[in-house]
Length: 225
Ligand code: XMP
Image (tube, rainbow, N blue to C red; front, side, top):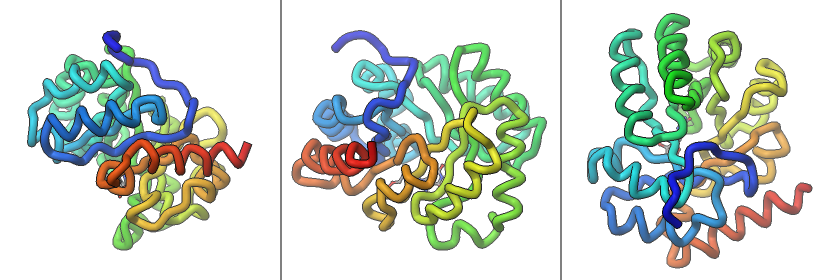
């Protein structure tokens, strides 16, 4: 495959979280599961390990989501978003707790490049709801919608929260949900609760056969249709 992917559509409902830290592994795993995933999410582990140029190498296989959880003043947010989209990413994950002006700047910059913004509304790890109380998460999700974001990030480890956040944003925004596999979340339960995509990392990229592992998640989701 040679063309870069920028638009992503839901086919399998899976986003690979590629938190390996070297290029060889990144390409090996992406190549193996490219037909099984709708996008590849990269973040600090891979980009700090290899440089932002990894985006052009991986975007031949799938659209790339930059999970930098951007959380700064609008000017700095804009500078970060510009780098990410110029590098060829299709979407960026940003924090919502920074408020409307920061979020608006991220969405405006993404729009200039034809890119998309996902806003973290609540995190998937056990401490993720310590500060992100139910009410605050809902307010962040509502702000994401008001700001024109493409979607939110909601925890697959708490499907009931995915359901509540879906009720807040309605049908227009997308939900991507990390926490399936290594963190104990179920792909089927998360999609049933209203997520559009599940994000799966370690259970795929650490598997002896990443493709077989991705197949399992794919068929778990397919059974729901
Ligand atoms: P694992 O290995 O646990 O990887 O399948 C999960 C991936 O998702 C990221 N992650 C999150 N990103 N909000 C986010 O924006 C969250 O609540 C969240 N929880 C996990 C994690 O960094 C890894 O890449």
